[in-house]
Image (cartoon, rainbow, N blue to C red; front, side, top):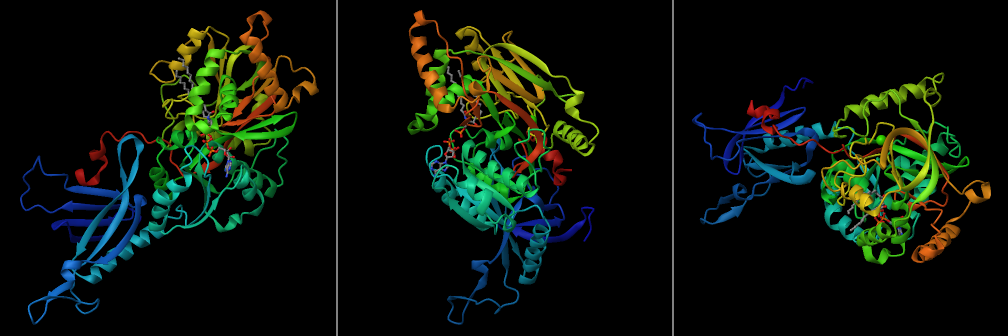
Amino acid sequence: MDRLGRLLLLSELRVRNAAYDVSLSRSLLSWKRRVSSPVYHPFRPSMCHSVPVSEIISVREEEEENVSKQIDDEGSWKKIREGERKDCRQTFTVSYVERCRQHRWRCAEVTFTCPDRVLCQSWVSSIREQLASITSRPKHLLIYINPYGGKRQGKRIYEQKVAPLFAHAGILTHVIITEHANHARDHLRTNAELKKFDGVVCVGGDGMFSEIIHGLIWRTQINSGIDVNCPDETLTPCSLRIGIIPAGSTDCICFATVGTNDPVTSALHIIVGDSQPMDVCSVHHNNSFLRYSVSLLGYGFYGDVLTDSERKRWMGPARYDFSGLKMFLTHNYYEGTVSYLPAKGIMGTPRDAARCRTGCVVCQHNGQKAEKYELDETSDCESDGEWRTIRGKFLAINAASMSCACPRSPKGLSPAAHLADGTTDLILVRKCSRFNFLRHLLRHTNKDDQFDLNFVEVHRVVRFRFTPRHCQSDSDLELDLLDNSKSQIFSQICRDHPACGCAPAYSSWNCDGDILTHMAIDVRVHCQLIKLFARGIEKPQVFEDLSNPCAL
Ligand SMILES: CCCCCCCCCCCCC/C=C/[C@@H](O)[C@H](COP(=O)(O)O)NC(=O)CCCCCCCCCCCCCCC
Ligand SMILES: Nc1ncnc2c1ncn2[C@@H]1O[C@H](COP(=O)(O)OP(=O)(O)O)[C@@H](O)[C@H]1O
Ligand SMILES: [Ca+2]
């Protein structure tokens, strides 16, 4: 009955036949073992537990079987029908989030036995009331499943691991199994009745997530009358949150926002109604819109790996390792010009030791700053800054709008990048020996700093442009994918015959796992344009007991 954490209910109930003092406040459900002597028992299992109300999944009432029976006149047990005995003991079971190793969440349960039915109902209705007052929880979700993503397990993962949890939490779902590429994107753009839903969930990989954001962002801009072809437009943030059930090959967006690629953990973050804002880059070519990106925009190495791996989809996720090794050995470099606008007046640098974690203050600070710039039309943050230009030969040009942590590289391409700070980390890897490039790559997998090498530089930017060296005229810029792949095939042959001395002129951009059809691009970061059902990676709970009010 109050907002100050005072108790709504306090009763003596039983858990596994032991007496507990159970209390409910607006924020916490706690149960503490009653002890006759205050002597400390070092070997007794933890006697006090508490669960934030925000992490309760559901509560259900059930009659306790053995107490609802009684011996009849002939001396045998008979079951009593509901309502026959007012004092029959009742139980209620609370399902809640339990944290396991490596950021995994599981659904745990505790059953409380009440001395009578009235008290049991009072507990169940009080907990339900508290849950109903959490307005951030989704009630109706639109779900897209890519049956061909990753190891082709999307449908099975959803049906076996996720659907039962959503049903348990009372979430209604509308499920669409995609029949072709861009099915989800086009459905979101035009057909989906979005007003009916509190969120969209994709079951698949980064490519599938990309489809969802393209559908949602496009629809939101059209509804607000925004010209998506103009790179200088301020985009309208999407109101619907997006959930990711990982069932793809890299799943870096899920890994970098949750800390693990685990369908149950993701489903639980959706159920509890988490919200994590995220930056989105818009990619334009000559004032026409190409794509959005949230994780990696990579030219050179990662572009070539993706182009090569697309032909090996049948290999599943292993295609990236195979093509990665092949492109490492091929060792192509590309000439071009990169211009960028450094992020000014923001907190954080790409070489920070601190990481973007749940409730990140850097994201909050920079997010508020970006919002202020957008409200104040007289100050244009971009004209305040100064463009810088770098010309050179690069093995890789990567823009990481977030860490891009994934199981292959748990710290990611840019370990200190932030999910929602309105910037992207531009990483330039200049032409170097194979040995040095390997050193750089290996450092993605160990504690050493992958930027601490004299052929690597990294800049935190809000906008950048790239022009490949041989792209001087418009017709060159419009080289299509076919020409590009042809040039790669010929250059591959030339590479194999060093006498020719011809190196490939062009790579392609890998945009969140999609190949772009143009090389000359203009990229701008839009701070916190979308929201996910996630909370960022949680900091390890070292002093868990101290944060537990029962322990104090
Ligand atoms: C020697 C080991 C080097 C390991 C280097 C690992 C760096 C990994 C950084 C990964 C960044 C991933 C960014 C996300 C990209 C995704 O959007 C996108 C699409 O994902 P989806 O298929 O789930 O839809 N995925 C990708 O573009 C895949 C990129 C994966 C690159 C793997 C590269 C492996 C490199 C292996 C080099 C081997 C050299 C060995 C020499 C002895
Ligand atoms: N039913 C479908 N058939 C074929 N391709 C699809 C289908 N649904 C989605 N796609 C496409 O498959 C691509 C890869 O999907 P994704 O779920 O990211 O898996 P992966 O991580 O293995 O690449 C995406 O670009 C998406 O557009
Ligand atoms: Ca960012």
